[in-house]
Length: 296
Image (cartoon, rainbow, N blue to C red):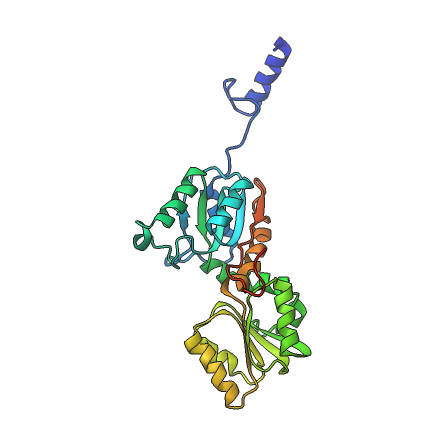
């Protein structure tokens, strides 16, 4: 290094209040898992709850982030594909370890749990459960992504965000349109295929008997769309309602596909306040298939 270059470097360092021993060129510290989580908390738009399932499930706050994967469910397959893409922080909407609260005690001796836990550790990954606050975001992050994926922005009721109005169509055509747009293999439908659909109500994810009944019984709602529900509760109720003479229908999408596009939207949302590392949506595979349409 020439005397001129050395003197110039010392002058620049001195002007910044730094010593000549400082490494050059300056490199900022890598983004950490903890910093990503703090940015999510700062941008989600609601106060962070004390009681929540939204926690760091695997990995440590100080782990440097190489890339971020947004996904509906952190299955082993998703974790493997994320790792192969260099994405070592996984933001998942649903649990990683088989219960809503990600409780370890019931499965800690199970070989599948241990295999998954070890995989995460060996690959230097972290998993953050992002459920409660993404639903709490206004508008609901999952609902926003699903509406965008279905192209229902113009059909949404501004006063009742779960409800949608359509040009009159048959239940069969309406269900086929959803099936095609969301690429669903195993949708299930209850109701007369020729039932005229003008108004639908969507409740993404799991829907129990309450509020399922009040949703369905709204007089202008023709069809209720859910991710999943107990077959001996809401499904039986809908069957009885139809036999009693009510012109109603139920569409069961499957839990995963009923919220998946919400995490696709989450990847776009995070890009608004994280630009140091790549952020990608990693799709979770629909778990079911029909024997008449085997998986290739």
